[in-house]
Amino acid sequence: MTSNSTGKIFKVTTFGLSHGTALGAVVDGCPAGLDLSPEDIQIELNKRRPGTSNITTSRDEKDKIEILSGIFEGKTDGTPISAIIRNNDQISKNYDNLKNNPRPGHGDLCWKEKFGNYDYRGGGRGSGRVTIGHVIGGAISKKLIEKYGISITAHVIQIHNIKNEEKMSLDEIKENINKNNVRCSSLRVAKQMEDEILKHKQEGNSVGGIVEIIIDNVPLGIGQPVFDKLDADLAKALMNIGAVKGVEVGLGFDSALITGKEMNDEYYIENNSIKTKTNNAGGILGGMSNGMPIILRIAVKPTPSVSGIQNTVNLEENINSTIEIEGRHDPCICPRLTTVAESACSMVIADHMIRAGFINPDKI
Image (tube, rainbow, N blue to C red):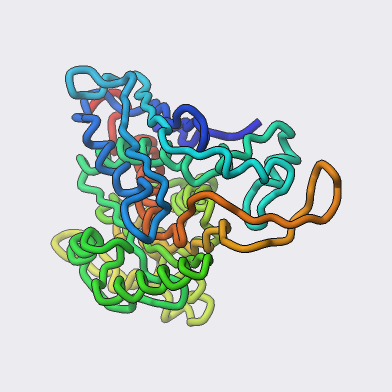
C-alpha cells in the first residue's frame, strides 16, 4: 500500500495521477470559521502550475480549483474540505516506450517492482504533478496560520553553480521573489540563474539547486522534545517532495565546522521577549521552536527527464536496452518547487499549532 496522508490533527490526504482524470486533496481537521475561498487556493496553485515561463515545462494546465465540500457561506465548517484539479493537457502517447523500460533517475523501476501494476504515463502517482495535493493542503494551512501571524517564504538561493549571496530583509525577499521567474530575492542573480537554466535546456539537459524556507513568527514551544520533533517533522515533509535529496536546519552541515562557543545562540531580552543574538540553530532547539525564525534549506536534484539516448533495461525481455525520453519537462524544478516547499511546511506548522493548543481544533 502507498502512504497518501500527512498530519495527526490537521490531516491532508492527496490523490490522483499525472495523466489521470484529476488530482486533489481532502483536508480534515481544519477548524470551522476560517474565511476561505477558491481564490485563496488558486493563488497558490498559480505559483506552481506549468507553462508560465520559458524555464518551466510547456504543458498547458490551468489547474483550476474545484471545491467539493467543507466550505459553507465562505467559511470552513469543520467538515473535510475536498478539492480537485482536472487534467486537460496530458499527452500519454509520449510515454508508450516507458512501459517496460524504466527511466534512469525516476522511480519507475521501484514502482513497477513494488506494485506490479504501475501507471507509467507521465510518472503516474510518482510525478511531480501530484504536488497539486500538497499545494491545496498548503494553501488552507497557510491561510489558517496567517491568522496567527505566521508567514512562510521559500526562495531560490542557488541554481547549479550560480549562488545568491546578497543579504536582504524578509520583506525585501517577499517583494523581490514575485518579480522574476526563478523566485530569487536578487533580481541581478535571478537573471544569471535564468540564463543558466536556459543554457542547459537548449542542450536537452537540466539543473538542480537550493531552496531556502523562512518560517517567521512561530511561537516558542511548538513541537515535541523526543519523537515528533518539529525539525524532524519539517525535514520529513520536505523530503517527501520527490526532487528533494537533502535538508538543512539553521547552520546545517556548516555546524560541523565550528566550535560550541561559535555555535551557541546567546539569549537577550528585548521588549519583554527572549531572543537570541544569532540564529545558528535555525529557530529550533530540543525539537521545539525557540521563537526565532525557522530557517530551512533543501537540496533539489536536476530534473531526471533529459534529452538523448540513455542506458536502461527492458523488464519484459530481461535484457539491456536504451531509452529516449519524450514529453514536456522542466529544465529546473526549483522555481515551481518553492510553493510546494511552503505548502509542506505550512501543513506541519498548522498541525503542531493545533496539537500544542495555540489553535482551537474546533473553531476559530
